[in-house]
Amino acid sequence: MRFPVSLNILALCLVIVTGCGNKEEQAAQDEGSALDQLTKSAEQMQKSMEQMQGGEQGDRTPVPPVSFKVLMTFLPAEVAGMKAQNPDGETGTMGKWSFSKASTSYSTDDGTKNARVEISDLAFISGLYATYNILFNMKFSRETTEGFERSSKLGEYPAFEKWTTESKTAEFTVLVADRFIVVVNTEGLDETAARKVAEGIDLKKLATTTAS
Image 1 (cartoon, rainbow, N blue to C red):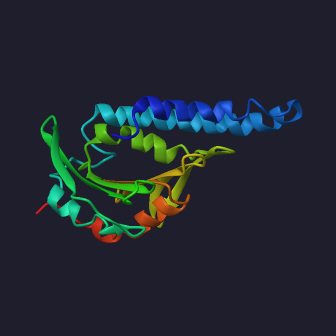
Image 2 (image 1 turned 90 degrees about the vertical axis):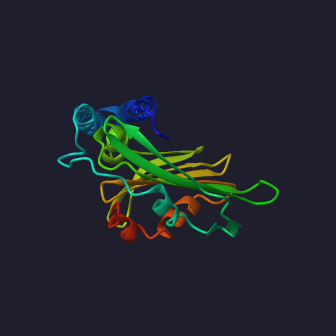
């Protein structure tokens, strides 16, 4: 996965760190909200870890995954004028359950602009969602001169987006129907590019897709 537990824990710690550079007179004002946010994040982390130890995603029983060949059909044919390369697909297992994913890359001839799209069906296997549950539910937002990271939404679906100004890299991750994870990465494009790619995928159709 792209978001290991350690990275999400670091992200949670930023809730505290972002207030450290404030002026003394602002500290007292911010203390309450920062503490509330930290408490909520900690509670969500505990809930997600409990789900990871169980056998369900929330109250859902794991199901057979959609074939990676079907997931491939949702990959964009092109991104920002760049044609899709040959897609990759695979099916993996976790205990008695299976999950699948499909991905492809896009690039200009000179390599100055690149993109990658990955669509995964984690099939309600709770252990695979734990870090995403933390990521989407911590309501995190941070903006600096270097870029930003923030919780977001894409229609009805929870999302998380990141942008790094210097490298012009963007990442947009969205959870579809509490089941599918769509991750879009772009490089050399603008800060809205990854989100626009995700918007162009037929997420509503993906949400209703099941294993045949």
